[in-house]
Amino acid sequence: MLLREQLERLRVSEETNLDYEGTIQQFRELVQNLQSDLEHLRQKQKDQETEKSNLASQSQAMMSLNMQLQTTVMKAQAKAIDLELRKLEAAQANDRLQYSQPYLPDSFNKTENEPISTLLLFKRLVFKSELVIKHLDQTHPISEKIMDNVSESLVSICELRQKAAWVGDLAKRFVTFIKHCTPEEFTKIGRVYHDLVNNERK
Picture 1: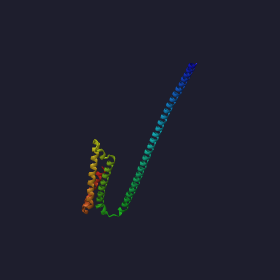
Picture 2: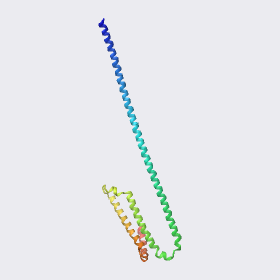
Picture 3: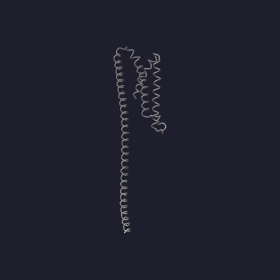
Picture 4: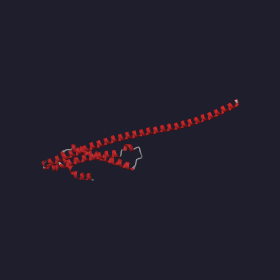
């Protein structure tokens, strides 16, 4: 009788243990599923934060680009206004000359017109040479490329810049000479005007 009760208790204990093991196994699976879901949520949150950071970075870059574009537009507008003002000054200077020229004596056209035109021609050459050099420096910054391999095009650009500088310096010397020469020399300098202006147009 006692043995039978012990066996029954043992059977019940085994069944209980099996239930416990089944419950523990289910709990483990549930924990694993929860851990997997939690890891998925963390990764999703991380992706969202990365995406949010990328969007913020792109937004900042677009704002910076927009500011640069606005600055460029403002500078372009300022240059356009300055150019129009210079055109107005040139037009008014031309009008002033047109109005005053009929009242000048005939001797002016014979002795002083061409020397003055020669002086203005040399000043134009100074301006044009400086403009060429400025354009070359902006489009082909030699100081940034001099450390790289020197190409034939860079050599040509350097030669062109050197020639423009030489023409500009020579024209400056003539301007200085004409401003300080005697009246007789001033009158003679006008003889080369037509030859020079033809070369300028070439």
